[in-house]
Image (cartoon, rainbow, N blue to C red):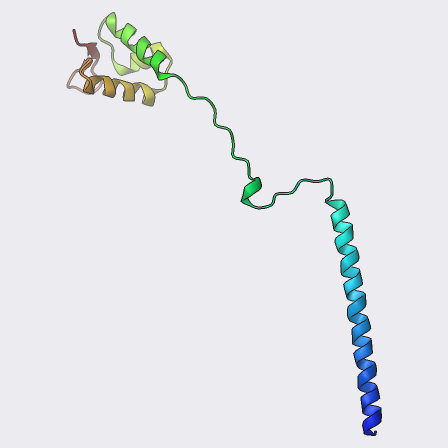
Length: 121
């Protein structure tokens, strides 16, 4: 083979590669158009900006619970179990409320475990 023949073969090969790349690019463009048409009417998530956090529910009013606990303790001393069942409140919320009231010196509690709370007069 001569140098001219080698150059011609090389040129032919470059043209074939160029045609192949052009066909690949045309196929990719067609695929992009097809996907754009598919997703045109659909909403997609695009990062954190489109994230909508859940709406928190309203919290219960503790003022009503406090009033009902104080009204219950006006009748006489009560253990925490009976206070929870009578007020239909959450055990944790009621115990926090009772601890807060004892720190404010509105209530007193017996020294034994499970003892009853009484109102300070």
